[in-house]
Image (cartoon, rainbow, N blue to C red; front, top):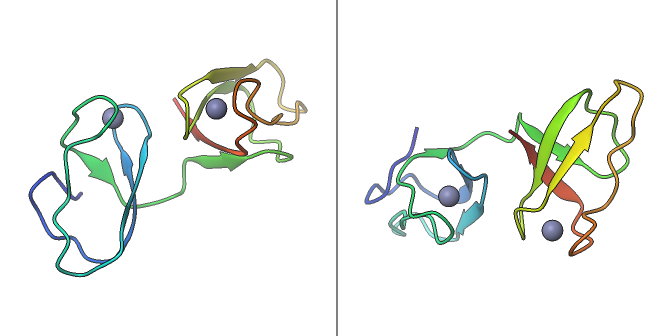
Length: 93
Ligand SMILES: [Zn+2]
Ligand SMILES: [Zn+2]
């Protein structure tokens, strides 16, 4: 797992704590602290990501842009766009 201060290389990383997305464009970029919660641990996998229109199952999902949460009560529920900012990417929390 990449941490703040490391140079994990190009890619998209997600704050372990709040799910904020960090993009590093260069192999020499240093991972910053999370701009949202100051967290220093990140995931480099998108396996917990859910996108609008999918049926990711019961659970609470957090908007990757504004941190608004959406709760799905049923496995057949479709994930809506973020009610606040219309973003279509969420992380499961
Ligand atoms: Zn964070
Ligand atoms: Zn949002």
